[in-house]
Structures are given as structure tokens and as C-alpha cells.
Length: 191
Image 1 (cartoon, rainbow, N blue to C red):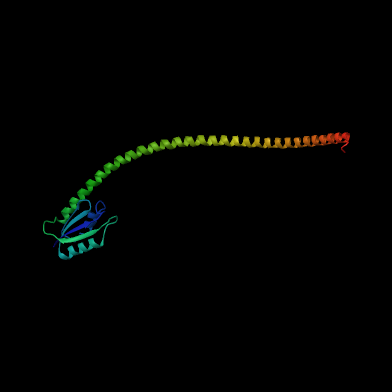
Image 2: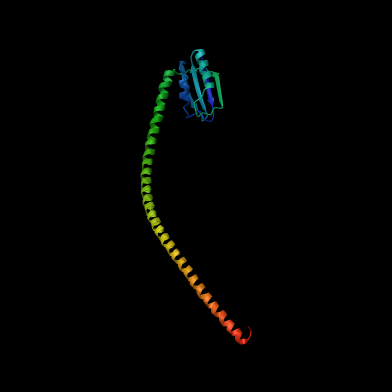
């Protein structure tokens, strides 16, 4: 028996769907899976009726993580279906090529990241220097603040002393003025 299974959805490619389907095809004699367009995976299967039906049912029930499937159709197929071993060998080779390409890309990315890390280390070293300088400035500012507070306390003390002296002087002056005003009033006969 032969069938074509078409899986459609916004996320059915580059999520390991073909590998997932291959893992569910162990009882089949023929198998092939390919990405079609941007939103389909087409699967050809061949085997005895119970194995093909079990595979179709598993595809309807199970999905790999991260997929988004909108439709699964199963239809009869007449034509050549590759042996599962042949597909497995070809698929493994395709996956190894993808891994190699990804590894080369990652190597370049890692080299770039190392450069970025080296640059960041320089920035961190510079920041440490800035922080050390800021600590010195803060220490100096603390000394200045202590000095300002001491001057402020000294100024407050002087103001209090002057206020006390001024009060005493003004009290004496008012007393003298009152005495003079009294004498003037007495001489004028106002008292």
C-alpha cells in the first residue's frame, strides 16, 4: 500500500519534522519526505496496510515541539517510493552538510564574539579605572564636606556669639537712650 501525507502549516519546516516523521516510519518499507514551498512537508510511504495506516494515524496524533500545523491530508499514491534505508542515508547526509555549514558559520561567529569579549574586557578595565578615580573624587568630596560642616559649625557659633554681644550692646544702648529721654522729659517738665 502507498500513501502521500501532506502536512501544511506556518511552522512545519526547520523544526525537525522530517526527522520526527522518519522516526515514526520504522515499520514501513518505503519512505521519503521533502519540504515543499515554505509551508508544507510532503511524505511518501509504502508498506503493508496496517503499517501505513498506523503511520498515518501517528502523524495525525503526534507533532514535534515548536510546530504549527493547520492541515494534514492523507491520499492514495501510485508511483515510486524510495526504500526507507535509501532515504535514511540521503537524509543523514543532508543533515551532516547542514551541520557542517552551521559549524563553519558558528566558528566565524565565535571568532567575532571573542573580539567583542576582548573589546569588552578593555572597556571594563577602563571602567575600573574610572570607578577608582570616582572613589578618589568621592573621598575628596567627603573631606570637603567635613570641612564645610566644620566651617558651618564655626560660623553658627560666631553668629550666636555676635547675636549675644549685639543683644547686650543694644540692651545697654536702649537703657541709655531711655535714661536720656527721661532726663530730657524731666527738664522739659513732661514728667
